[in-house]
Image (cartoon, rainbow, N blue to C red; front, side, top):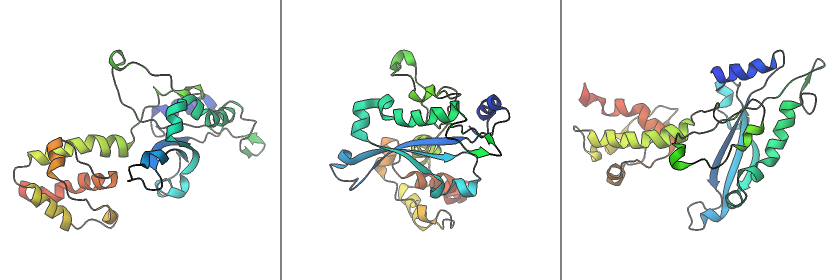
Length: 235
């Protein structure tokens, strides 16, 4: 979004103002003992944000991802989007619409703090699935969930597209057995960057069911190094 046409269109509305774009993220996570049968009782929803314009060496650090809100997943299911996010939205709207209130001051001129959002998307036919509700964040100026489509590379790519595609690719390999592939994964010399993301064994169940269950970091390593791992027999 920040490097594309969406950001250029948004920034054009503010002319000489200093605009600071923010990304807002949402994800669910388990606390306490997330593997226990009662894990869902303590499931949380986290809303975090970061500055979109940070250089890669800073944007990849946890220190630059800040917590905005925590919600019990059970509360979210009961009260839904509008009530759960009303406080966050009420804090964002004044910063966008009233640049004279609660914003940064520089040389006597108010700097405008503009917030943008990252939304994962799934395209579905509305005649089949219907429309549940309007996005509650659309009340914020110059944001609309239809125009601000973007991919979450971890969830939409590594944990979605790749888990299905890699299962089909591995199933179609004729020069290797699954045991051979797992041996190569076990002893493959990963780079220093990915040393902590060594891939666990891929089971026959994964291949049979058509999708591989490993972490996003492991899938990233598998996709990155797969050609090198098996490439010597496909020259």
